[in-house]
Image (cartoon, rainbow over all chains, first blue to last red; front, side, top):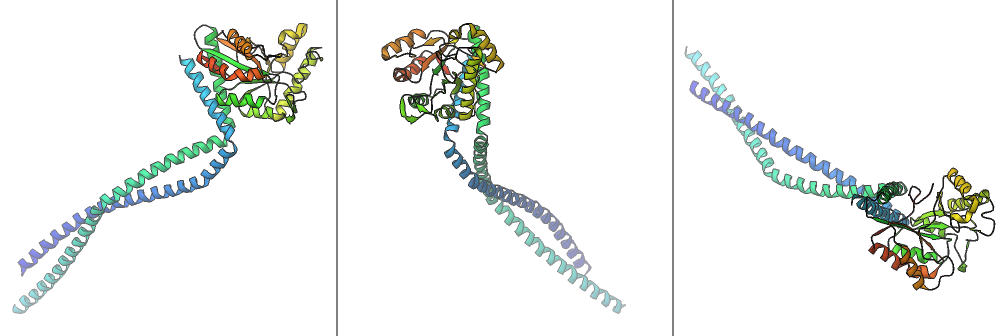
Length: 91
Length: 312
């Protein structure tokens, strides 16, 4: 009887050790998974934010470009002039 | 004794049952946790793939966001941005002039200028300048300009704003251009006409002019020239004549003459080319002039106050 108790206690101890080990592994994997899920959530949230921003502002931008085409062309022309004079100075 | 042994056996049996139950519970929990851990492990690669794909699409979106926000920043502050670039251009163009004058650079600059406008023909000049991506300088006058001289059914009043909106330099050629109508009667009469034109341009474009060209050239002011220059300086103006002309100020009708005048006059490393935006010969040869100047290494710049060519 005594030996049965000792054997069973040993098995229980071993099993508890395994339990500790498994819990440690579980916690490790769970943390990793949780981090990834968080990162995915954050990325998705940012994508939604950007999509909303783009939806709102693409129209504003397009409207502005439509209304101020000449201003933008003139700005780009000045940029070309700036580049030309910078290159001429460097020669 | 037998009674004690029997009780002890019963206790041991109870302990065995308890330990066995605990053992099975522990085994069961172990198995559950092991399976759960494995499911996380198996899912891990999928999650990483999902994360990578979301991250890359997020990066693309971020780039798009950056592009749109930069564009929005630009369009919301387009005037400021344009002024910043212009300011930098003027500083560098002045430095380039300094180097050319000091003989430290072989670069060449030409300032294409048009006097006496606007005219109805100015539309076509502006189209050519647009087509060749060139900024010029317009020394405008104001008297009777609401009706185009060269097409009296048309209104030229919007031309100042059009020239300015296309980025050309707006300069002052006095309101009346009245060389024989009292412009040079006194320094004050000259300044009065400068101020009238300044107000007109300011009113039509929002720009305050700071470069003047004397109608007929500075020498036409005769004995008043120095006093006028003093007054111009006091009012924040510089003044400029020209170094090259195609002779279109009168009634030039032969484009061969115009072209030969142009070619014979362009030789210095910095040229200020005088032309008139009412002349059809000038309009006709303008594209060839621009090509010629570019082929001969000239940078075609718009005039600016800080330029060495503008006398202060």
